[in-house]
Each structure stands twice: as C-alpha cells, then as structure tokens.
Image 1 (cartoon, rainbow, N blue to C red):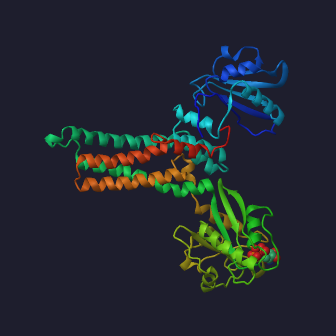
Image 2: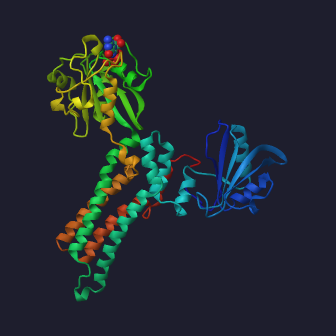
Length: 468
Ligand code: GDP
C-alpha cells in the first residue's frame, strides 16, 4: 500500500447502527472540507481548537443530518493534524451520504489504522503506545485493560527511554575512546560499564519475563477441563461460566468436540475448554475429538482433571493422561465431582487445605471436591483458579509486556546484552564493544519505533481496523 500522508483522510470511527456514529476526518484540508458541507453558527475555519459546533450537513441545499462537529487544530489533535469528528445519527444511509459528500470534495477513505499511524509519524505517541491503542480497544477485562492502558499512557515508553539513555551514555564514552585511539586511553571505567550493563540487563530480563503474565491477562487464562466421559465436565463448565454453553447428556462421549466458554473472574478472563475424554475408541468422530483434546491440554495453562470417584488413584489418572505430559508452566488440579452422590468426605473447605498446584507426579494428593450439579465446592474451585493468576501488578500500574513483537525484541535485546557483557569481560576493544551495545539499542528502539521500517509499520497498522 502506498500511503500519501498529505491526503485528508476520512472514515467512520464507530460502527453504524447505533444511535450516533462518529466520522473522523484528518489532514491539512479537514477543516476546510468540512466547512463546505457543514452549516453552523460560525464557520469552522474561524473557530478555535477543541470546540464543538452544532449544525447541519447539507448536500446541494438539502439537509442530510443534524450533527455536532468537534474541531481540533494541528498540532493539538490525536493525529497532530487538523481534524474534525462529526457526530451524526447512526444510520448507515446518513453515514454513507456524509462520507460520499466529503469524498467527492477531495477526502480519501482512510486505510486500516491510518489515523493512529499518523499520530505515530507526527510524534504524538511512540509505536508501543500506538499498539496499545488497539489493545485498549480490544480489552475485555479489568486486567487486560490495565495492562494496555499503562502502556498507552506511556509508562513502558518511559522505561525503555531510560534504558536507552543509559546505553547511549555508555556508547558515547566508548566512542570517545575511539577518537583518542592513538593514545590508548580508557574514559570509561570498564567495571562501572559492566555494572551499568548489568542493571539494564536485569531490567530487560524482568520486562521479558513479565510477558508470561501479560500474555495471559491479554489473551485470557486457558483452562482445560479433562477427564473420562460422563464424569461431569460439561456440567462443571456450565456451572463455572453460568450458562448452558456445553452440551450435557448421559451418553458417554457426548462432548465430541471441544467447547469453549469464557468467564470473567475477578477482572481476569478465563477461557474454559471442555474437552472430549482421552479414552480409546473406534469411533472416528470421537477420535478426532480426542486429538483436539490432546491439543487443548497442551495449550492450557491450567488443567482441571475431573474424576467422579474419590478413590481414583494416581496411576489411573496417569493412564488417562495418555501421551500428555504437563510442562513446568502448567498447573494440574484434580477435581473430584459428584460429591452429592457419595458425600463430600474429607472435602477441602478452603484453598489452603489443598496442596496446590499439583505437578503430574503428585497428582494423587489433594483434590478439590465438588458437585457440579448442586454447586457445592465450586466456590473453592474458583478460589483456586483465582490464585493461579495474580493480576495485582497490572492494577498497580506496573509495566507488563503483553505484545509478542515486544517480547521478541526484548529477547533479542537481552541476547545482545549478554554478548556485550561477555565482550566487556573478554576485554574487547571499544569499537567492537560499542557495536554490540548498538545492537541492544537497535532492538529496544524497534519497540518504541525509533527504529522502524515501512514493513514493520505496515504489519502493525494493517491489523487495526479502518477508523482507528
Ligand atoms: P461429561 O461427559 O464429562 O461432559 O459429563 P456431563 O457433564 O455430560 O455429565 C454426565 C452426567 O453426569 C449427566 O447426567 C449429568 O447430569 C451428571 N452429573 C454431572 N455432574 C454431576 C454431579 O455433580 N452430581 C450428579 N449427581 N450428577 C452429575
């Protein structure tokens, strides 16, 4: 796509069909073009920035709609350009008429993400903030919103800027040495530099490791509900999400496919996947379901292994696992269901009574006892789930990385930092050392967009929708 950043662009910023629809116009001629079709008390060209104007949109003297136009003058706008936002009635017809009126006067339909792209190019926000705009819009829980909002408001950018400035300080000292290379001087005390690099490395590492939480908060925590047919998996899923999402029946193997349902628990999105059992079967459809179960188990952060028999032994569960071997990142909880039938026995009354999380090897120990049918014990199960994810850092405004692109850049920055540190230890000459540190700067700069290419921008903004 060839962009012409001088064009005046237009797009609806909200879907049509609501009571109102906002149409956005941005570019040098935005105010002038709007004045050609808008009739208010005062011409927009003569109005101040950040003002709202009631009036009519007219097409050859005929009223199209009553609207409110909000006017922003460059550089005090989202894009940094002259901009107007027209709040019209949300009819598809009205919005279409206003768009075509302005298009016929020389505006161009905006590309996906072009408003935010312009905001980035005008220096109104850096790339990580621009990406966070999309995340804020997509946020579906308190936790995912907190992560995106901290990033959008610039906390992450500031943090990266601070790290970059530390590194720039080091490189400038090293490069100064190059100017005096004949004299063999060392301006930069190597030990101090190593300490500084260590500090940067630690911080990069902790940002990198925050991705584990960030990704979970952004995408939701996947919980696989697994176990033999008929143990009550679908019933439990319905109980957990509070609606009839999964199919429940007495016929073993009813849940042939995986069924997914989401629930917001204390501000964190949980994605429950009801899986088919892992039992052996000749039924082709069921075999497909089992294959999908294996996939779901692999991807899940938490696995609830359901049995309907309190005496179920560890070996039985291990046999049920089939080829599945949980990773260190996964937590497996054993849930004994149907306690209304055989009594709760030594039913754990609080989370603290349980040994959690369990690894595959000690799966036979504690168990959460529930009745999916009556709801008994389900509250304790929810408490267990809550403990699996601690979103308090996100609520406290800590910087948490949630973007895969950033995570990869941080990983590369960390590798480059390790290389710089070993170059320093080996006493490599300052030009080589400085080259290594420039690599770190490059990767950190790619997150905020100090270093960017048309390809990267295209890749990021094309995923936005039109009007953003
Ligand atoms: P799935 O195959 O594991 O998904 O099992 P279902 O959720 O379809 O349940 C199988 C049967 O067990 C159904 O008749 C449910 O009503 C019943 N069931 C599920 N949970 C309980 C429970 O806690 N107590 C009792 N008594 N029956 C249950």
